[in-house]
Structures are given as C-alpha cells and as structure tokens.
Image 1 (tube, rainbow, N blue to C red):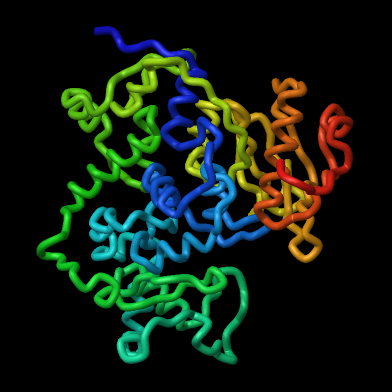
Image 2 (image 1 turned 30 degrees about the vertical axis):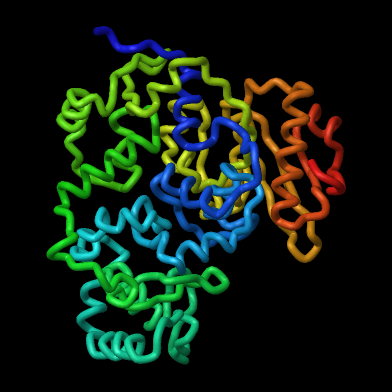
Length: 406
C-alpha cells in the first residue's frame, strides 16, 4: 500500500496537535492539566533565564494559558515530577524515572555534568555532605558558604555546589523542590524509599526503546533523524527501529509535500479523519520542544532560529532573548522582549515578521490579544512596543495600557 500523502500544512498541524499547540485553551487551567501537558511533551526543559517568564513556566503557558506557576513546584514537591538530564535538564513525569536510571548509574558517560576526578579528590568532604543531609534534611547550594579563595565567573561553582551537582547527576541526590528557583536536594533513598534497582531497573536497551517511543508520540509526525535528539540519544539504529515499529503498527509512513518520507505516530491517525485547522496564537520559549531542535523547525516550518543570549551583542541579528511567535499553524514572528517587573511593563524592544507574512486585521488582532494576555500573566499593566514593521507600528502604536480582559 502506498504511503498516505499529506500537505505540508497538515504535517505542521499534526505536529502542533501532538505538542498541544493546535488550538487555544477553551477553559481555565487546572492542576491536573499541568501534568497532562508535561506528559504530552514527555519533557519540560529547565532554564533559569528570567528576562521574561522562566522557560518552563512559559512552555506551559503557551499550552494552558494563564496558570499559577507555583503548581510546578507543588508537582515536584509532591513527587509527581522529578528532575534529571533528558533533553537537557528537565522536569520529567515521575513514572518515567526508570527510563533515566541507567544514566545515573553511569555518570561518567554524562560529559561535563559529572567529574569523576573531582569526586575522588573530594571523597571525604562529599561523604560528610551526604551524612549532613541524612541527619539534617534537604539542602540548597546557598546553605553553604563560599570560600574566600573562590574566583567568580561563568560556571565557576563553589565546591559544595559542585558536590551537589555531581551527586545529582549520579542519582545519589534528587531535587525535592525549589526556592527562588534554586534546587533543593535530598537523598534519593528518602525521596524514593520503595525503589530497588534489582526489582525496578530497566536495561539501557529497554529504556532507550521507550524514550524513542515517547519521542515519536510527542512529535506526532517526524523524520527519522529527528527522533534521537528528544532525549539526546546517540548511536540509534533508526532503520531497524522504524521497521519494527511499522510492522507492529506503532507508526505509519507518510509522504509530505516538499519533504518526502516521514513517519506518523499511530495516535495521530485519528486526526486525519477530519481536516485539521490551527487556531492558536502563542508566544514560545526558545526552549520549547517545538523549536529546540533548530533543524527540525527550519525543515518543517521554514523558520530559521537560534538563541542569541550567548552571542556577543555586536553579532546578534535579533536580540538577547527572542521569542518565536506561533500564529495559526505557522511561525510568523519573533519578539525581543523583557519584563520590567518593578515598573510592571512588558517591553518589546523589537518585533520582526517573517518575510512572507501578510499584515491583516486578523494578524493584528491576534498579536495584540496574545501579547496582552502574555503580559497580564506576568502581572504587567502596560505593553511598550519600541520597534516593529511599519504596518504593525501604525496599528499597534508605541504600546497600550492593560485594562479589563483581553
């Protein structure tokens, strides 16, 4: 049987549906929606940059709308989520702990995240730290003084911070909460007293297979080479894996306009029974799963994107922390934004439209509504628009006050 033929926009919409970004939320968010969203994505990447809302909060907002960010800390403290290295540092559904356990038991394979020489050199001090936590309870890095000889700088952690991070990577410590977004660490045995490697452990092969399956479900539609990046997997036998999946009906091959052969997760087949229509407009985090794989987003959405906060200012094309803007199935714009919290102003330093984007009443209305809701969620009372294409500047002006409901 010949593969199903799909338009490129249908492929985009299937991907958005799998990610929870196809339609605007129809009701107010509930706590259980947070867990459902993270399970749908499989992973929620963590980043501490807070120029606007921190990335994990923004990723959830893009899918749920206004929600109290305290839910994330509550879910972590309740054990519904755990933190570990997946795509990068991520919040992960608690039931997926077995998928990452093998990484914890081989921390030397984790690159810069674990330093075996450091652990050997400081073995006595680290043993004392573990004993301190056992006797006194959870700790933060901030609980320990910085030595007078410590040299500040990028990634120049004080010794106890390095101890804690190495123990976290090795699975000896787990994150049980956050205070001012700083990790709070406790012993794994206290967090997961029932866990037994001999009884509950998955082999690395089994874990990798399930991670690939999670990736396929969360992507919805994909090229084979997009799969491994989701959990940062290496040396994946993609041809053999997809052949087995096709035989069992887990995925089906499809031919996508201008893209060729792709694979569709079996859950997405139901979306083909009626035409998919994208209605959602959302501001996205640079670390959103929709855009974190830069090649994927370029191939599927014709959107060339990179985060420039680590690029010297003189070499930036757009800005320090530009946010992609999804509009009804396409990535049509990007914003260089900053939340001025003391002044309660969302500052948009610049707003760029993609080259083929047409400025019409629908786009203008959606942009204004989306930006207003985004600003209100961060307790802003005003939007300041400093620079934008002429037609948008004429329609939106230099900004607006936030009164009433958008």
